[in-house]
Amino acid sequence: MPELPEVETIRRGLEPHLTGLTLQSLAVTDHKVLDISARDGKLSALEGQRIEAVTRRGKYLVVALERHYLIFHLGMTGQLTLRDPARADAESFERTLTGLERCDQHAPDRHTHVHILLGDGRQLLFRDIRKFGRVYVLERASEQLFAFFRLHHLGLEPFTSDYNLRAFLAAFRNRTLRLKSLLLNQAFVAGVGNIYADEALFEAGLHPARKASGLRRAEKERLFSAIQTVLERGIEFGGTSFRDFVNSEGEKGANQEELYVYGREGEPCLKCQTPIVKTVISQRGTHFCPKCQPRRR
Image 1 (cartoon, rainbow, N blue to C red):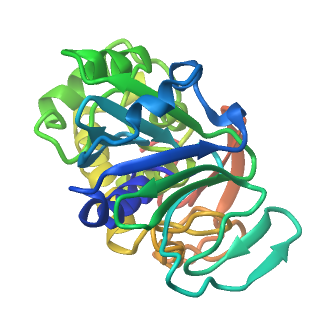
Image 2 (cartoon, helix red, strand yellow):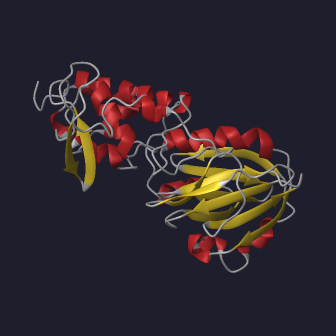
C-alpha cells in the first residue's frame, strides 16, 4: 500500500504540472472506485474548473479546484500518472501476481478506471488493479476538508507544526496497543503503514510487540524522531517499490534498497548481523532485529 512517502512523491511530481491547468473532462470506466460523494454525476461538476493546488494529508492526495476538492486514496495498488499523447507509450509486460506493469508513460488499460483530460492535452490516469483505492469529491465550503479528515480519524501529520514532541507525547495517553498496531492506526500518526512502521521501530530500537503504555519518555522521544527520519528517507529515495508503486511519471522508487528490516526476513541485520525475524502483529507481517530491538531493555 502506498504510504506517506509514496503519496508525497506523487504529489511533488504532479504539483508543478497540474497547478494552473483546467480540468477539461473526466471519464470513469469502473464506478467501484468512486466514493458516494463522487457518484450521481458529481464528477461532471469539476469540468472546466482550474486546478489551484495539489496537497496531501496522510495517505490522501488532494487536488484543489476552484470550487471543489478532488481527493484520491490509492488503496493497495493505486497509481496516479500523467500521460502525454504526443509521446510514445512504454511497452507493457505481465506480472503473475499484480497484472500489467509498466515503466515510464503508459496508455490506459483495463485497470485504468478514471481518465482526466487536462487543459494542455495531457491526461491524468488513475489505475488500480485491486480496486481498493477511492476517489472523493467535496465542495470547497468552509470546514469541508477538515470535516472529511476528521471523519477518517487522521492523527498527527508529520512535517507540519502540529507534529511536535508535546503533541506526540499527548497522543500516547491511554494507548495500550502494541507499538506496531499503534503505528498502523491512522488516528495516531497519519500516513504510516506497514513498511515505515517496521522501519521506524527499528530506527528507534523498539520491539514491535511492546505495549505503548510501557514506554519510557526517552523511548517515546526516540520514536518521535525515528518516524520522521524513515519518512524523510522514503521521500528522498522516491518511495518504496516492491510491486505496484510508481511516481507520476511511471517510474519506480528506490527506497526498497534502503530498508533495514522490512522484507528482509532471514537476512543479516545491517547493524549487528543478527538474522531479521518476521512475525505477525495485527494480521500484518512485521519485521525486526531481535538484538537491536529487544523485547525489554
